[in-house]
Length: 496
Ligand code: NAD
Ligand code: MN
Image (tube, rainbow, N blue to C red; front, side, top):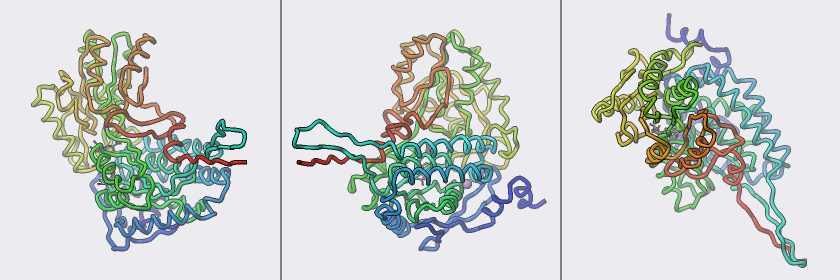
């Protein structure tokens, strides 16, 4: 059986049509076009290491073209002149188109990322509400009238920023595109978005749907390309007003410094080393199942992964045993099998990086209870792995590994765990497991992170701000805060 047939048996007709376009293009000004340089790059399926297709690679000239289109669209009455209800309808139409194409998007995403199909299906369906939530905001972006003297009238307007550059990562590519474009468009901006070079395909599929539902040309431009070329050109471009970035902390810092000359508005969602804290009075069945999910979901390739599991000393041995058991039962394998829970890592680079930590952890004195090796002999798979006897100062407890690797660390009491949990340059998320409600809130208040879950993990919802303290980021996505991040305020005085 040829490789072609083996993929072909698992995917729908629409996904086949999409993949048959062997050369994917840039989406600029409402049209699909090749890169001006003619350059392309390959995107691969990390489960099989096979090439899925080639993709036009945007250079600085293409960024320029996309920015021109976005600027023109921003000024045009077809976008700036429409009322908020019409803007909302575009978002709702895109939401409906995504719902109608959910299976195709999930299949494309699974081929490009290796994330299990069941997870991608749930993700696509589960994130349609992001577009719907922001459609609701279109007509609720208020200014104020301010108290002023009798002969003066003062009011404020919240106006869009203009052209927003958005740079997204490979770990949940569909979600990241939706999370980025929805608030930007709701606020009346236009967008130039560069998806990660490892996973450009779902973004290109979204571009097809944007074209299909009839957004005015240039309102959304999607330009796959390299970070160091297209991403960097976006960061310094004089006519981009804002950059929204999700990815590694180092690249985020580079974007911040690269944007200084043009003083762009910047929001950054960066890395993490999030604590998940289990007290001895917790509902251990739930805590253990959720903690395992916390560091293995998406094969650990999640910025909010709960990679430092803190366990109270009087239950440490029991919890280590039960977590190790659960991890050994996880089903790793073909992302198209309905029972698969963990797929491969995204790339050879990530495979090498994650694998290097198996030795680093052992050399530093930690012990592996389960995992610690490559899984199989094809694809970038590693076994889900548990380290015990971990000290919070070891590299495996300090550095973002971005693989299915959990470090279990013991603690004595509340003060001890608060100090250990906060002893990190990151501050993205945290979990705490206890039946003592007061303690749950005390810990939630004491942890220096942008999000805390009491007796859960991974909950997110567009109603509530998402983002990090310290070196985990700047600004917030979601919630009312994201409206501030995509608008600027104008004060207007009128004298009678
Ligand atoms: P990355 O930060 O390089 O990639 C994220 C995005 O940034 C991609 O679209 C990339 O093209 C772009 N980019 C890269 N260099 C750029 C530059 N100089 N200017 C502008 N844009 C640029 O991430 P990576 O190298 O693929 O992964 C490395 C590590 O980053 C991972 O091991 C993980 O620790 C972390 N990471 C975190 C997240 C997250 O959700 N916070 C996502 C992906 C990776
Ligand atoms: Mn890929």
